[in-house]
Length: 85
Image 1 (tube, helix red, strand yellow):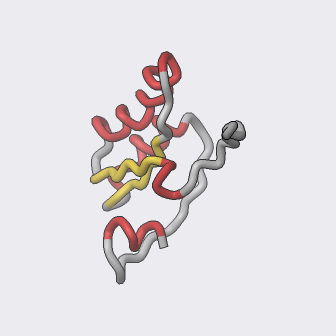
Image 2 (tube, helix red, strand yellow; image 1 turned 90 degrees about the vertical axis):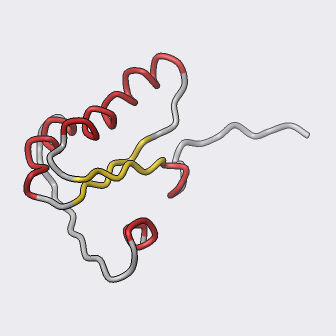
Image 3 (spheres, one colour; image 1 turned 90 degrees about the horizontal axis):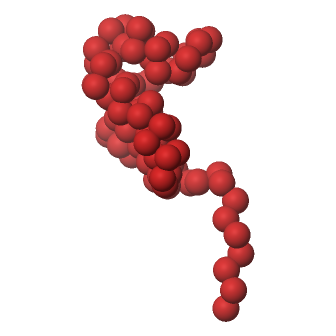
């Protein structure tokens, strides 16, 4: 459903599991695929610089198109503190 929402109905995809550092594995195998979907979490401060760099590196170095999807688009699994009224 997420793929259809971003690239259109009628597209097919598959999931592949590989071992290694995510950015290196994705970059090394990117010429085997037409499109990579990469989750991108909204972070702040140093975490944004360090962890946001992974998705950025994949976008810059992959040999195929890359669709970077913010996790807010598909639901953020991080628990949020309750807000006071």
